[in-house]
Image: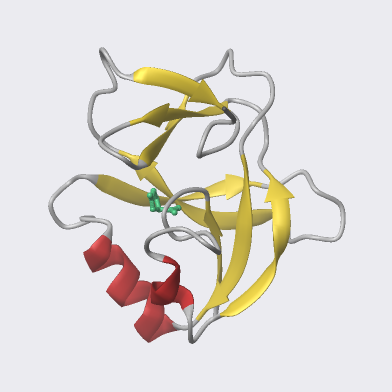
Length: 121
Ligand code: PCA
């Protein structure tokens, strides 16, 4: 089983939430600083940005191997859209690290939305 941090369309109530239906929700948590979200085409991309002070808020799920394989396919890992990488969590009571989907393409010209998606307002 793998702890997976999701911050976009896979979150509860969002468009792709059903893809986690057979997995276990752990809770809402925050990442280490140095990670930030950009708005892409109706979904967000998390990127590493050393100056980002706040980190990202999202959900931690416990995902089985088959589910992770399906999610990698959905997120376009093989096509180089996202890379699945380990990041650190700072919320007490959570594992110290989790896997997440880091956006693997350029965010040049995209809107920087900060710590949470969808952005408020
Ligand atoms: N889906 C993945 C990565 C970005 C997206 O919209 C997620 O929810 O974490």
